[in-house]
Amino acid sequence: MLKTVKVTLKSVKRGMRAAEIADMLEEKVACIQTILKIKEEHPDYTEEQIAMKMIRHSGCLMSWNGADSVDERVCS
Image (tube, rainbow, N blue to C red; front, top):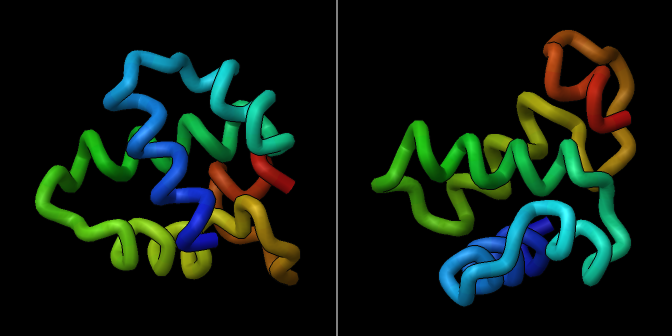
């Protein structure tokens, strides 16, 4: 998860779009967009904090039981 967040944020800085990053990482576009949304809403978050938020709240990039958020339903 952390590696995906790191690569996503570096790729955005290089000018790549979410769809390009998702294709490169073989992930769903919705998951990459969620990473970018978290960073936009919380610019002070570290990469580790973003990864933890993804794990706790969205279920993106990992299998978690009990979909309880919109992001998790989108990303599952």
